[in-house]
Length: 582
Image 1 (cartoon, rainbow, N blue to C red):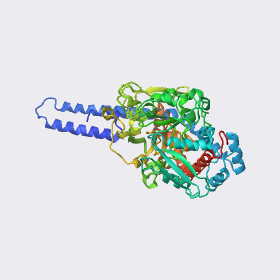
Image 2: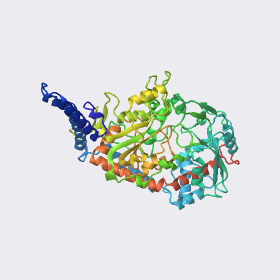
Image 3: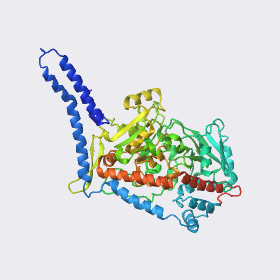
Image 4: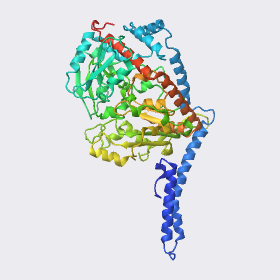
């Protein structure tokens, strides 16, 4: 007990208990010694074995807090404060620029996409207005994924779906939407539990009988995305597709094979700048999530290195998925997982901000990649799993890499921000652990069990007792995201997967974006949880995120999005539409 390292403890109480337990044990030993023993009283010096490291730990924490306060206690602005200030202006612009009437919405559609809106667009607009949707124009993610499929005629799109369903082990749900009753029914060749897909579409579209035509569509059963769409310049027979199954293998080259032939993704409108910071704070989330701009991502995410499942189609195959990286062409729809009971926010499980612990919380399992001991794995080393996104995060938050230096910001004598590196990490600001080991061979499971500090399973609502909650990709999107946004805690979000809501949730206003490399996390947590100004910033993000979630990510808002997606899909598979026809 005396030699427990206080720098590796997540709780100050645990450090004190270690001192008390070791002191009581020492006292017992001393009093059991014979009275005639020499130097008996000198044994009390051994208490320093536990007291001195504890004192050093307290000193290091106070020094870190003082350094942060001295740097940002004056008028000097922290980069996070700059980013929040700029993002708020962008958010106000997003809200204000939405079309106020149908004529403006029609004109904006033509301006953005250089084509006429699809049939039924006016009915969709009236539905969106009737349900007080704050977003009318920003649905670019639908058009970007739908438009390549207009190279096929409507009949060819339907025929493509039929051929895909004849592919062995396709693992897709074939869904039929009946327009007259607004009812969706999904079937699978061998599965019976459709992961709430039918229920989800019925809930979102069930109040639209007689509005949409009959439609059929394919829904991905797997967590991982499914569609790789070649650019028009490289596609020969547009009715041809190739099915590939690559579980447990690196496939970065496959995912980025069309980068040089595609136009570079546009930078986000929310492109911010910060002064005098060497830390990789996310200033342009669109660029940060663009795989083509970041070859270093190839060894930083389990999806790219060793996915548990990766069955993808290369070609114009229309498939709906809940999330996909920038280089893939799945149609995105709201995940039914967000409606599962353990992912739904309940105010009774939340507590006021003032009662929350000033720390960052995450607990979960090792999903996100399959940990293998294959010597041919990439990177070619025994602990390949240590490069997966969740393992890297937990290793950072538990300070498990010997000699690792973390980057922080401090002000110089002339009032300019400078970065410096230190091996110190205040673990009292983190409550992060794995609670279960999954998706690993026997040997890699054992290696992770000995490497990480595992905790027992804990209820998901425990996260709401911390001011900061972390959300990170697993095999696919994280189902906890909406629960965290709806709560009174501030969300730190790391993902490489685009979702339907990306155009309406503004980074640094509704959540704090985290880079895939995570080099900025120690400074982020130190500022947001370890300083008074930072805690106020975090509280503002929590409040804005909750307020906007309740206004723009409601169930009805998801319905507005899916309605518009179906309007676009109806045009794509219209049997009377010719190739390239709008």
